Amino acid sequence: MGTPTAPKRLERGLFITFEGPEGGGKSTQVAWLSQRLQEEGYAVVATREPGGTPLGEGIRNLLIDPQYEKMEPLTELLLFEAARVQHIQELIEPSLRAGKIVLCDRFYDSTLAYQGARSLSWPKIVHLNQICVGSCQPQLTFLLDLDYEAGRQRLAQRCQDDPSQLDRIEREQRSFFEQLRQNYLALARGERGPTESRWRLLDASQPRQEVARAIWREVLPFLESRS
Ligand code: T5A
Image (cartoon, rainbow, N blue to C red):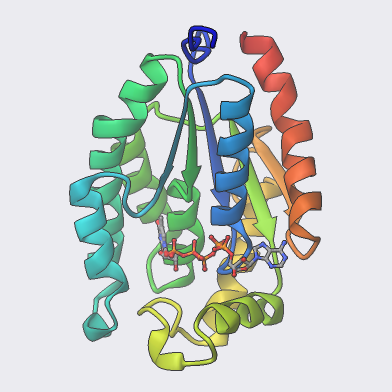
């Protein structure tokens, strides 16, 4: 048996985020890409928001618990940002400094899309994101776009058609989900600010393998330019 080789470290870490409406397949694709990159020998950290740290996971439990249905939009916004600050400081930045590839299931664009679909002003959300995120910016962001009906069908399968299994946010009205999808599309198309080249818009209604292939095609050039 040969000596196991140390995982490949990039000169600079690579930060990739996955965004989109419920059921778009982010978790599925993060898991696939993580495995593929590790097979190629890269050091990978796969994480999620809200969560990724013990404190962040605790905040996540508060955020999705249906018993807090009266949560104020500003309370919700602050809790997402609090979890994010901890996540960046405790996990994301140290991993990037160590030359690892960080794959994150949701990041601050989720706040723009979701909390932007509530009664909060857009500039307020942008400002708070800037305070909390600082220079910790993803180099590549995949938007796994899926329409409401398809997303709900996937969610129903996961919950075995039992609505009591839905979390606090999944219980929102259809109009909320329609709005947040439009927010995402506007972000990816550069209609809510300067066009950012990091966005890759993908049709998440395709089979899992097709989506995974499209993601891999986009990731490869980043690996080549950083190795
Ligand atoms: N939120 C989060 C905010 O409001 N603001 C914020 O700032 C942040 C960070 C997080 C909630 O918090 C909100 C957004 C969310 O409501 P979550 O559990 O992380 O909660 O929610 P989701 O990310 O929406 O998790 P889901 O599990 O619903 O969606 P995923 O991860 O996109 O989908 P996935 O991979 O789990 O797949 C869902 C199902 O579809 C199947 C899978 O097998 C699974 O059963 N599937 C496919 N089926 C057919 N074809 C494909 N291509 C498929 N891909 C996956």
